[in-house]
Length: 250
Image (cartoon, rainbow, N blue to C red; front, side, top):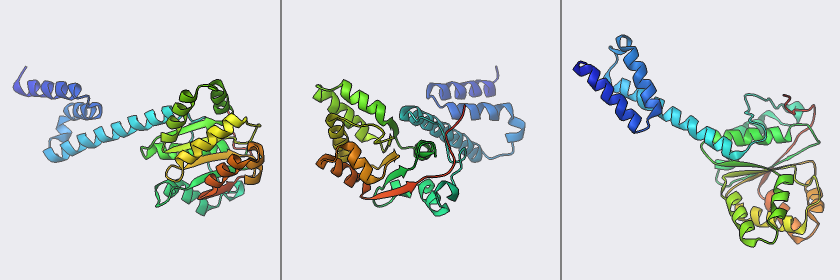
């Protein structure tokens, strides 16, 4: 093996040891197409390698965040369209997709209301997907599943506190179908602690078939129920969906 071959082998070995997967693929591509790259400056070639490594790491992080987020539907705004016919104006859609509700001076909660099947969950998942692409943590929770988890841990204050702290850490949390079924006082108390710990820095997305007054009634019409809705609504962007079903089909 000549010196050039040894140098190539050494570079590839070092890239593997440093776990520079994107850099390595780009390096192998450059070596395989040396004739085409021979006229490109060293600095330009190096820049391309680092850009490829950055892209690979961003994609890896994005996929990890999506998996961690447990989205019900892995949808993006490129895959599902919302229009004025669905109850979302172009201005509102731009606001949601632009993520200024999260990265602005004040974080804004998102309340998505509407009848069954109009795309509330799909819209929530699109929003979470968008945030994951920005590199921030997201979590999707069905209220019915969360309620069961809370009741299973009933009598275990330390476990409930750990669960609350875990959910409070996500940059954006989505609670799906709030108010679809009556909730116990234990679940309402947990929700109050969770929403209170997130406000006003970390926004919460809530989907529901109910209006705010209906959510209060579903939560028990007590002081904690009122406090939950009060914290969700201040500040809050409300979207009321309508029209045809957006439920994904398999």
